[in-house]
Length: 191
Image (cartoon, rainbow, N blue to C red; front, side):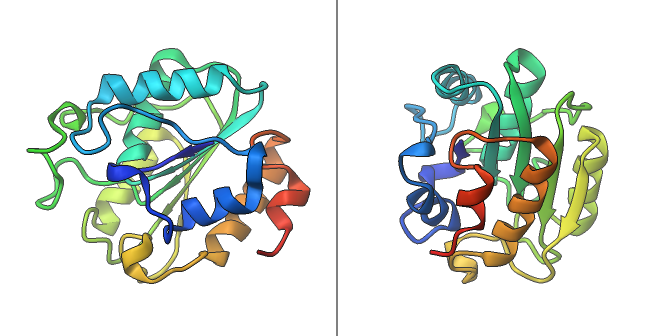
């Protein structure tokens, strides 16, 4: 299940490209507050989307979606097989959109009771490498660096982001996830 960041990840974003590749076996959250993110609304959107899917879903989150997914997981996690978190923002960093997303500030990274992998960039405008590793430690997640790749979004030029897709494929192989587009056959298929 795709959990985008602010404004929902456009057509050129790797999340949208992956979802198109997965077809109808993938879903995306639909909060009513894409432009002025509200944490409660985003958590409810995740809850609705997960409830509509078979057990064993993997959340594929980007940016602010990572904060929503982790908060949702600590509050009301249903049968989720894993979390694949990419480029979570540092809420205490100078570029965090606190004015636009005030309900996403002041969150604490607590251990998640679900398998997860976090992928970060060494030069993310929204999160320093040190802050990213602190988040991973707080959530008790393994963390992988994608090198100097910006915010790992469409603007950073990663395209379909094959490296990330390979990481997701390897991660889901260990979770046994077979739903919502994260089927091993679908995850390995070339676009």
